[in-house]
Length: 313
View (spheres, rainbow, N blue to C red):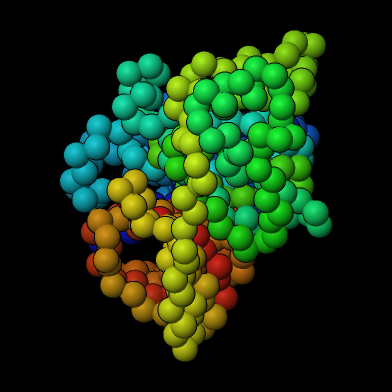
């Protein structure tokens, strides 16, 4: 019998983290500076555990290694995607991620193309998304001189916004923003600028200037163009579809029956409650749940009021 894989996952404390993973989603957090919940992850720095069914207690990386049939018989050597929720109680560092070739050569893991769905944002919140340098030489000069006001592109954000952040994009998430991030399964980040902050031991955090210059894209970031289909009981938006992932928002207000269109799906319930009916079984869904519909799930029905971010490779 086909079943969803509900997951229990790992919290990550960060210098910029806060408490909204607890206040907004009811998660248990390890400290008042909890920055990330790696909600669906098989990355060695934070592996999800299956919470239900015949695979209960099994780590997602182990399940992926042993049962590729549940994941479309994927040829990827590692589970390819990672879903996070981030709570930015302060600015993240200004950073950039490498592409696959540079990441594999220099870090021994995939590069990191990612995208963000803004769950919540305080009034006046903004991100850094791109830069003003017209060449790699100008980029290096502006970084060396610390011309951050001239270099960095600030963009205001609000709840419901979506940003595609390909590898090579200069970026930073600003204070007062909570996002759901869909990304390649990688933990490689090159810091360009960290606002001269010190960690809890009084030291400046490491920067990666040369690597950042090596991998940075010159020119405007390639943001996505969402496409929405309105149904009687649902609104289905496709945010981005590329060689790494396809990401949707499924907003359901009633009942919606669906058939499998991809090998498997990663789903995160961001608001509401309802249920999933699959192979004659019913599974309750609530805000903060994260689960996978593996390859043996052929069709299913959602009922209730649910807002979900959904992805697949």
